Length: 189
Picture (cartoon, rainbow, N blue to C red):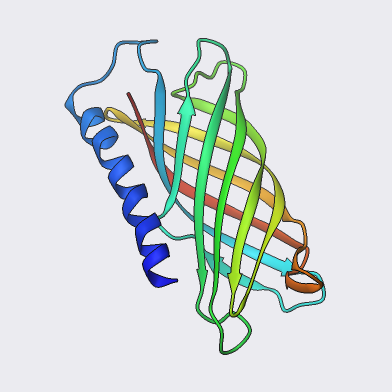
């Protein structure tokens, strides 16, 4: 399992590095960028159904790729990796969560600056001890982009609701409500 997770982490980094290096060369002309690349870090309070609530930190492997448009609406693919060393006491839990969000720039905002609303859905691919399962999640947030040189500082406050993920009758992850924040950098290419 460590080799598999290490391979996913390596692929995510290798995919992100060329875009980040290109974004550092020079700012794209207004309206010339086709993609927004971002990396985020998050903190969330989670409350599982029938379980013990707590806090969790998102790892640096929370990667976003947005498809920039001239409209206020853009689509964004996300890939999040969560690791919980505590799990259920002795077993660690891994969650790989690909998803898609829609990002809507609010009044007087652009796809590079200002307030936005976002919402989306995703999968939770879970490995918990000997069990593995797939579940679904829904999320919504309000966020802001603040220019930072050729990039933008991006932060969000929102909620995420994970539906139950079970493995043939064994509940691997119960229904869980997450409330939290994330902060990261965005680059355009």
